[in-house]
Structure formats: structure tokens, C-alpha cells
Image: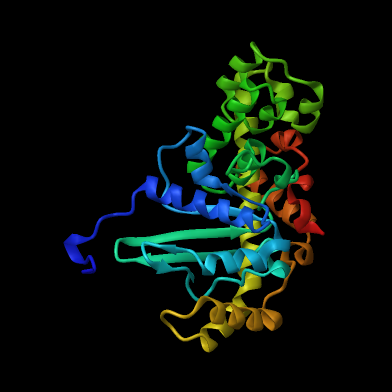
Length: 316
């Protein structure tokens, strides 16, 4: 069959993408792997987005070896899976448990299909394994995944929170960042005191509108700073691994299992397994609070939530 090239190429559609990854999840579960689709594709499934280019998957670290074997046998448009780039950590339980993410791709004539595999959510105050709904992670875990430093993710966080409240899940109050929407929902749905204790800013619903608005902005900025600090820790911890891997790994295509063995060998000596634990959660929180205080009135910091549970397994 003639390969498509130049103007002949047809972009990979979302329907084809989603069907491929849903089928992949089914095959993984048939092999006993606990996994679920998260992030953008999960938002599409909830009706909060119309499409996304790539896929993020949560995989229980204990199943990393089986996960990788299934990926090896998975083809998309006749193309086999490969590690993406020369900076990606190995898909190995030891590093997945510490919050590292492994990146894969299927590079076809029509474009690249990309997959990011997480063993532990970047923010995980609860067990994501217990929240799985169908092929996708549950809404609470999804909302925490979307609390990134990117502005474009925050409408999704609020949208998920609203859907949770309307479905009778009071945890949705933890993920609302639109002051007017919060007030409207508070007139229709109960706000448990236990939730207010978890998220002190909600005690300001009936206060001055400007104060409530500013306190919500400060809290959102706090979450964004926490993610920036987290990424900074991983970026610093990764540098020796990246330098060494670039020396050892040839550029271009490489068999995924041979590539995997090379990455594991390199990671043993050059990639710390638990960078968040080693750096210290308290240091991350304190640095994030200081950064928020530079942009917002210090009085607003009193309504910031206790974020230690969000680091979950990463701090162990």
C-alpha cells in the first residue's frame, strides 16, 4: 500500500484516537492491570471538552511491567509504540511510584499519537483506583489532576466540581473557582460544614464579594504555584538522567524493550526514585505560599487550604 505523504496525509481524528485508547484500556484490564483514562480525554467523556489530541492514563505502578508489554503489542495504523524522546523516564514501578511519568508515541504518516502514563497522580488526596468509572478515572481524581499551573485547565476544574454537586457529591465544593457560580449553587445545594473546614475560603460566600473573589484567586494561584514548585523539583532531579541518556541512546527509532532496558540502566544511577519526598513537601508548600504572598495581600493566605493530603503517596 502506498504511504501517505505530503498533501496526501489525513490528520488523526478524535474518534479514532479515543477508540484506540479505550480499546487499549480494555486489553490492559484483561491482563489484570488497574488503569483508567484521565485528563483531557476524560473531560471530553464528561461533555466538558469536544476533543483532545493525546491521552493520559493512570496505571497502578505494580502493573508497570504488564502495562509495558501490552503497549509493545499495540499498533496504531500499523505502527508500533515507542518511547517519546530522549528525556522520558522508564515505565518502571520504582519510578512511577515516585511520581515520574513515562511518555510514549505511535508515529504514523498521518501524525503522532501520544500517551502519557502516570503511576501516581500529581495531586492525589484519595485513591484514584477506587474512583474509576468505566474507562475513565472518577470526577474527584480528575479534578485534582486538572489543578495545574495552566490557566486553560481551571474552567475544567470548576466544571467537574459543578457536575459533582449536581450529582449529589458534596466533594464538588472543593473544586469550584467561580465565585458567582458558587453563590448560585449554594442557594440550591447544601454545603456541609466538613467541606468548609477542608476549604476555608467557602466560609466567605456571604462576605464581601470582592473579598471572596480575591480569596478564590489567591487559592487558585496557590495551587498553580504548588504545581510550578513540583515541576521544578522533577526538572532538577531529571537533569543527570537526561545528560547520561543522551550520551548512551542513539537518536532515531529504537525497539521499545531495548530502549526500556537502556532507560532503566541509566535511571538506576542517575534518576532519584522519590524526588518529592527527598526535597520535602513542607519546603514546596512554604515556597508556594511565599510566591502567593508576593502577588496577593498576606491577609488572604489565612483562607488557603491544607494541601498536604494532595501530595498523597508522593511524600512517602
